[in-house]
Length: 363
Length: 260
Ligand SMILES: Nc1ncnc2c1ncn2[C@@H]1O[C@H](COP(=O)(O)OP(=O)(O)OP(=O)(O)O)[C@@H](O)[C@H]1O
Ligand SMILES: [Mg+2]
Image (cartoon, rainbow over all chains, first blue to last red):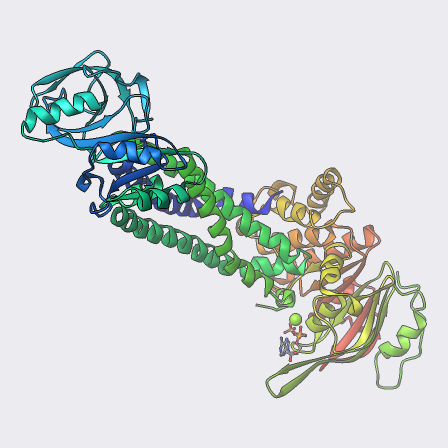
């Protein structure tokens, strides 16, 4: 004989509508967060996936990898700094290619095999080892395909596929510095040397100390902890902030809806709660009724929301890879549940104020 | 039925005994109310709802509390049932000093020791008749779940509600609802049943039926009961009648003395 569940069973419409409304709000939270993550990841994925603890840009790059130009000799200088275990070049450029999916814009990411700077998000195959191999994220490639680098008039065989490693939300090719240099020289025959954009550094121990040491000891450079470098990518902060506000607002609306709905239900049930207090039900017991109903509504709504989000993510054809993360789902549901129970305190406060004698009154 | 009532000669012009002196003659009373007063103060006005009430009720007795509207009947039985604390005075039910209990113990006291039938809203609207009975059994620990189910079914049977056990209150008639409330009051095997105007919403015939049933249940189970009423015709089902007027218990008498 459970009061909370029995009431819900008898008032399916009422609680069903609430669960429906809450599920839409949870769905919005999940979808917006998923999209925001996907969008941010499409911009940051490549840098995040670089095998390094610290990244070094040129001092005048204003925190922007693409604006950074370093003499390749800097790689060696950085490697000498105490605390640095290894250093490798990272080079990026945008070129045109005849991609399998019909598009032309290709991001190219150069690295030195076996050195820091190599990508880590390999999902299939292996990383390129020489100038005729490439690993791809996006563009519709499978292992064994040939990538046509039209601007440089070169070809490379796809030997590996990566996930979540796109740069600037475009198909991205990971290749050796060797091939990178060939592309640069083919498209800009007059360059005196092939610059690198950044030095990827692996560090033994405290990266903060190494960051300051590199900046201080290697002239013309500025070093960053990798996470800092990722969050400084142009656009990331504003995307996170914009979506953060939307998600936050939706979340708050959801909590307020739950809080007030249960408060209204509680006020409507005052007569019943008063009667139950009079016949010997304690405040704790009646509060548990509200808490249990909130938990059931939130969990039911969350289940619906997850289903909706999965459908939406599958149906979305946004061009950037979108995935619903279980951590996000669990975190969101737990947060909604926790705050909804807090909002339930509004109702519980009302219940605790009941004077059971009122039940004896004629009205 | 009223063998424990000692004969005290009536005062001239007074139809019954003074409840205070009656109380001293009930040495083994299960319920003892002594000098209980209740003053409601709202703003700067004070309402003396009950003044220095003294009464004693024996184990197994079913008594009436008779008085006009506003005379303090509900206030008095609410204090006896632990819903309201007296301004002054003591109430003792089977050895428990009711007025001395703290809030938590009062809740337990109401769940286990008292069965209420209130004047108005008595039932949980979204629970069936049977569930209304079963729910109160979850508020105590003396009766097991299994016993509670058997007890609920038996009570519903005795109250003629077996065919309505699965109906929610809005599907029941007024009389049926009051009968469910009576079942609810008896459910936890309380020491004392307090019934406030059980017939207020019923016509005379139904009212009689409900009170008859109530009296029968209380007697059969050897329970002690107090029924509040302002209807003279209902007192014939009780053992003794306490009369209350303007918050004062004026006298106790036999129901037969009030019959017309
Ligand atoms: N909460 C309260 N605050 C102030 N005065 C109250 C309160 N409850 C009752 N009273 C007053 O106390 C007096 C006794 O009320 P009570 O409800 O006990 O009477 P009653 O005999 O049960 O009447 P009725 O037959 O109409 O139910 C009345 O004058 C009433 O107005
Ligand atoms: Mg009353």
